[in-house]
Image (cartoon, rainbow, N blue to C red; front, top):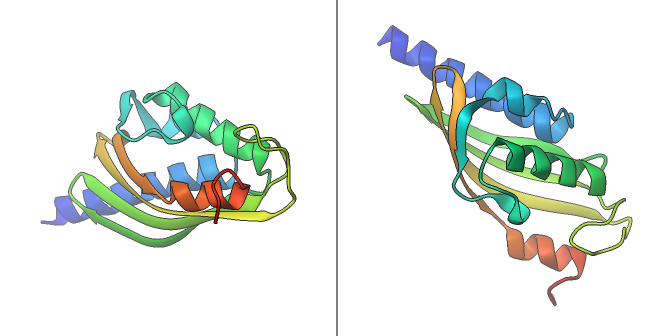
Length: 143
């Protein structure tokens, strides 16, 4: 039981480090630190590829368009090799994104991510983001 609990807590620490590193601090190197070489993103955001490079590109895209982008953790739940994160991310629209020039408005993106870990690295991600709300805030979809 102790091994399972410590592994579960360790997995939560890995996920928190990845999210804080890539999406809150803008550290693109977090991809190399926290994602396994064979990482698969089952729901890649913003049309990026479903691999490590795609996740790095998602981080770069958000940091370029929203230099102050941060992810606020609401819940982090883990059991065994699975960690679930519920969050709201957001930032000020200062760079072009999806063809939309900067608006200077604050944009938020709530979502849920499910991560599977192996040997202390993230190997899979499934996500559900409020894409429609995000597109509405950018003016790409009518309110």
